Amino acid sequence: MPDDRTTLTSVTSPIRPAAAVVLAAGRSTRMKSDRPKVMHDICGQPMLAYVLGACRTAGIETIYVVVGFGKEQVIEHFRGEAGLRFVEQAEQKGTAHAVSMCAPFLAGFTGDVVVIAGDMPLVRAETLHALLQSHRAAAAAASIATTVLDDPAGYGRIIRDSAGGFERIVEHRDCTPHQLAIREVNPSYYCFDAAGLLEALPQVKADNAKGEYYVTDVLTILRNSGRIVQAVVSLPAEDATGINSRVELAEVTALMQRRIQRRWMEAGVTIESPANTWIDSRVVIGEESVIRPFSFLEGRARIGRRCRIGPYAYVTDAAIVEDGRQVGPGMLTALTALTAVRSDANTKRSVSAARRPPAQSGCQ
Image (cartoon, rainbow, N blue to C red):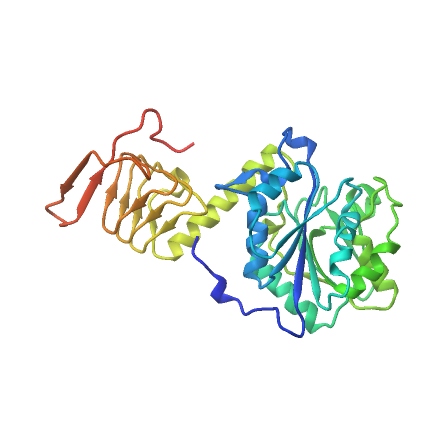
């Protein structure tokens, strides 16, 4: 995808650094899988990769990833990435319990801590950046980004006081009938002053329907101690979409694919039929290239400028299409030799025809 890191000014500084705690220990029994939930693919990458990428693009350099179920798979995939530290939560006792596993590493840290779930791949770096900026401008002990949903089922509700200020969050299963009617919800985007977070975590109690320790209670504890806690309606509803089932996995994948295609089109690439095109999140495409219907671009394929891909083209991981070339119908791999190269008399461009793969000519 086009690199947008230059559009954000860094939110870290020698005076006020930022770290992140990413919650990635869950299994999600509704996925019916032996893989950790955060390792399921979205457009070619594990969903956790998008969360880590958003944190880095927002200027957060130190990231603690809380792992539990299937921790070996998570650690093996992301091992060696700069700024990552894996912290084990052997028993999953709630979000506050997960964050508390990072407390020894955050001791003495004089900055801000973003806490976010690892199964939120639609998170945008711009949102995290704005959350940090707002948090610092308000000199808040804690800040959360909220959103308003037409169907808030399953989300914690934002309870505000008579002046419109943040009061507390009530989890869905703990809501009264009146609270269930509230449409402003908590999508789990938090920012804390590190010292306040560490002070409040030991005070969290598991007095709720699930008997778990909720990080949302940290907000209430800080507010009751007289500190500033703000809840800002700033999140597009789409970005609040989490994943707890295979159906939701497919829905988020479709949203991410539309986002990927939109960004390439805005970067000067023509996609003739977005509904019949698949582009991996790691693919690179040059300006003025045209992606024709029923094309599948996979992995780290690189498409040059002014290329024509398709129709019915499959460009595999690591394949390179040079400037001005045409591929399809058929398959181009990183290792396959082209079976024909001809000169197009009209355009004077080199047009490459790769061999057609058996039963692999369409999108899936």
